[in-house]
Image (cartoon, rainbow, N blue to C red; front, side):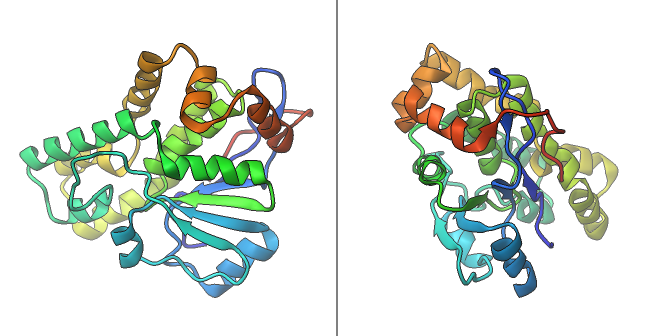
Length: 259
């Protein structure tokens, strides 16, 4: 399928020995390049019934997701930065314009601010948790490249399921592997010099320092993840127990998410 950074989140083991089920929750990039055959695969083989688009309205209109017969589509922006950037998190577009060092720093600062704020009071992530608790079909959530807004959502989801922080960060960083072919291809297509390519990589991939900003922001504001989830997303221990019962099971650990 022609989807950047597409993968199933599953196979990880939580801190109580429960295994996150595969083929229930999927993440990735925009669905504007897929065929109708791919869309049918989404609905009929993967049984996806909810598609949650974390892009803003302008991004979603510029690269519309494919139409689906069964799956319900919702677009709710996950970007929580008050100072709006014209390009949002569409760094492919930014890099094509050959930014200078000053522009890079401005964009980098914007990205860091996004990671500091996305975890809090986010209606897009609230909707994701609501859909997962509803449990009436598999869920696919995405943004443009499926790495930043989607990456924070994936991290929070794993923490809500009592996975280790280490595994949640590991799943987040998997985007670098999944996007390598895309980023290498883009660099070659645009003829980007190696030194400029190295400067661009923090924008085209993901960095552990970024998700650590999210973790640090949560730890600064709350004494525990329990308090964070209850205060920010109405996920008390009972609702999180429900999530674990739905999306985890006893069994033999499997390899975590893969591209």
